[in-house]
Length: 198
Image (cartoon, rainbow, N blue to C red):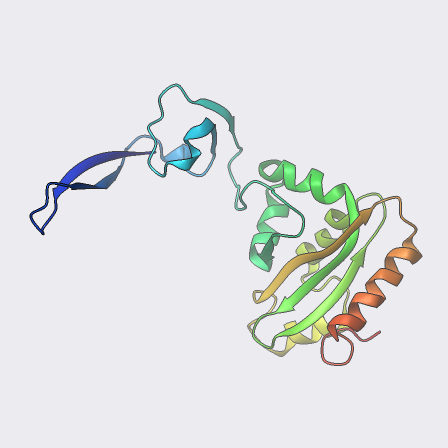
């Protein structure tokens, strides 16, 4: 928690107009709540400096949270380290678990140091959440080329970034999801110049 204290600065050009800047200070005693309190700021979200007066605390998340609140399937990408921490602290990431379990689809793993791509798919009852759990457990998800990268040096799996390319219902037939995965592999060239072998 912090406090914003406005200070007035006179205009150096001699005009009467005034400008403000805010001196921020961290308040002691709230360290255990850092990055865990979700507040409804109301219309005040437009102002970057707020005072916690008459604001509703929506939730205090469990300890161990490493990811921000889930917003949209196609707007995030996360590092392998964050992925692993997410699965190690599932209770702190309940909304990530429920949202990723709710969909099947096609995902992307970027090998940051080489720029190579791996396109994979997830289907079944646990959707993307269930598939990514395998990567959190064994680092490579059973994929030969990812395993090769991990064994070739110290950059991996740390330099893997995970994102979602397309979501579909978990009820979609597995073969249909695989067909979608195949089309995206072709579009992105992940077989010809990436990490997909098939």
